[in-house]
Image (cartoon, rainbow, N blue to C red; front, side, top):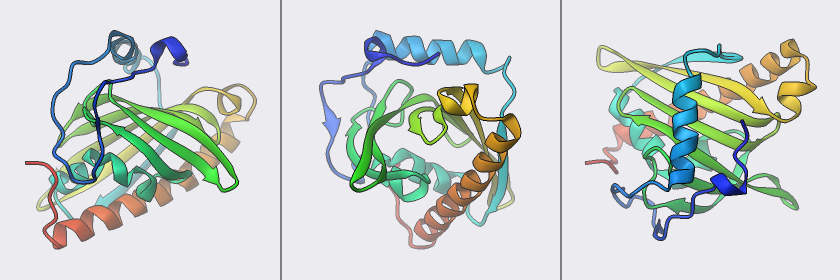
Length: 200
């Protein structure tokens, strides 16, 4: 179900600097509706695309990157720049304002956090991906001092769901999310080695 204007969040305060510690904020009812809808659907829908990668860092390092909304276009393939980050990010209901594409053909877009359970799971609803609106879930499993990250993506609305053949859609998503996991691994592993922290 797409999130129309009535479902957009507009928290009064937003985070303006990379690395600021996030804090709890009340979630707008409209965004809470989106989160609740996701919770009802997540067990009944199979993923369209699934990618898995071993990371040479602990789960906490992965969630350090996910918690910093300003890093979103660095690891998400297709996102080109950040415009704003809610103070509450990455908590459920918080919103990232970003753009997709390349200049001059940029499209303003937003991503809503649906679930935030560090150091195990995060789910997001992305609106302007090339295939249309999509739900993305990241699951992280510890493996000794390292971890395994799984990303699942399912088209919700737009050409990716209604007009694109399933096999074509799966191939596109698989290739893109393989690159997304590689970027996320480079960030998480590098920041962990350098001792960078934004949580705690």
